[in-house]
Amino acid sequence: MNIGEVAERSGLPAKTIRYYEDIGLVRPQRSRNGYRAFRESDLHKLAFLGRARALGFTIEDCRTLLSLYEDESRESAQVKTLAEEHLAEIDAKISQLQSMRALLSRLVASCCGDDRPDCPILDDLAGEIH
Image (tube, rainbow, N blue to C red; front, top):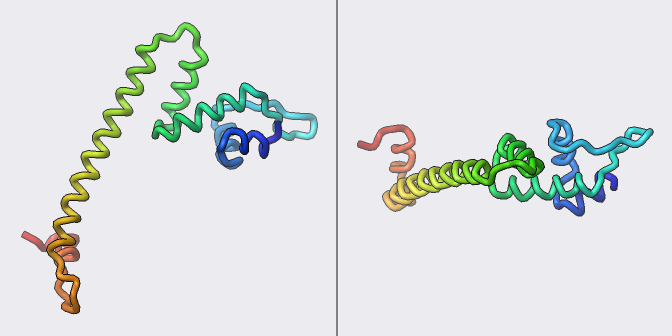
């Protein structure tokens, strides 16, 4: 398969596929003229990476997950630990976003939004609200 076909079948942009090749996550064969020749196994890896990235795993996490996937002697505990750590990071981000939302909601509610120049939102951003 060429890069266009593997991009279509994997749902990943060609630019992303080239990047994954540059950082060693996939290693397609090369024809004599230098064109990439992707195998079904490359397509499978790219789909795997696409799903992992959609769940928010970092590139390094994806490298680890792919390595674990390919290691038949792996322990599922290793995978679960990585997933639990990522889940904790997601929970922390959700908590932070909820706090940000609550503060911004209060600021929006306190702003009259009229033709006067005073604005509690700008005052807070400038550190002037006590």
